[in-house]
Length: 186
Ligand code: IMP
Ligand code: MG
Image 1 (tube, rainbow, N blue to C red):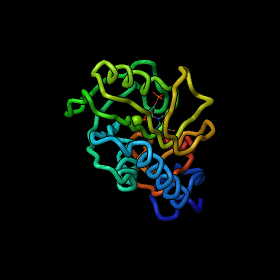
Image 2: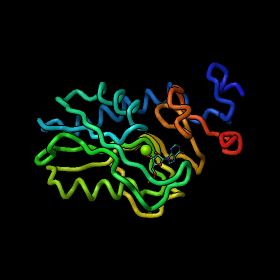
Image 3: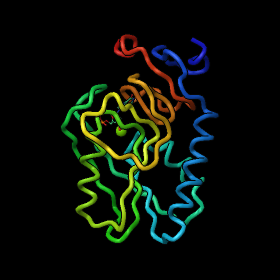
């Protein structure tokens, strides 16, 4: 259980992405986004609460453009299994009409969340809309999703850390760890 040494989470199975690898990838994503938006004066990072907070706040410091940030809170109905039902719990404050929006999530699982939020945002006439996710579990997709900026593709593990949680636990780990769902459910 080396990975959980300094953190009181007994459900951690193994570290799958180190803090260093995350840092390097976030840096590279920041470079790409800086380049892609070099002509944009109205760039908005729109994060989905709460999982994307750690990723978004690190990523924004690697983007050398004027940026604004905003958040939405959405949830699907269960603890570790996504359902097709996505509920908007709190909406963003910025009027995104005419803005270049990058929608940021922690992880794409079935794809239902991003698909639903993307559709909703497109109705609000942003100048452009792209999707950025730290993690993707392609084998779990139930709908097809274009991810414009992706940190890492991972196998079908349930993961925590760097903002991601299991039942609100594990968000403060500086790395990504796979968890043992049997222990997490205790
Ligand atoms: P989707 O709608 O199935 O794509 O689910 C996406 C959301 O489910 C993410 O924003 C996470 O909140 C949650 N989720 C999916 N897989 C994981 C995981 O492995 N760890 C933590 N949260 C997850
Ligand atoms: Mg989420």
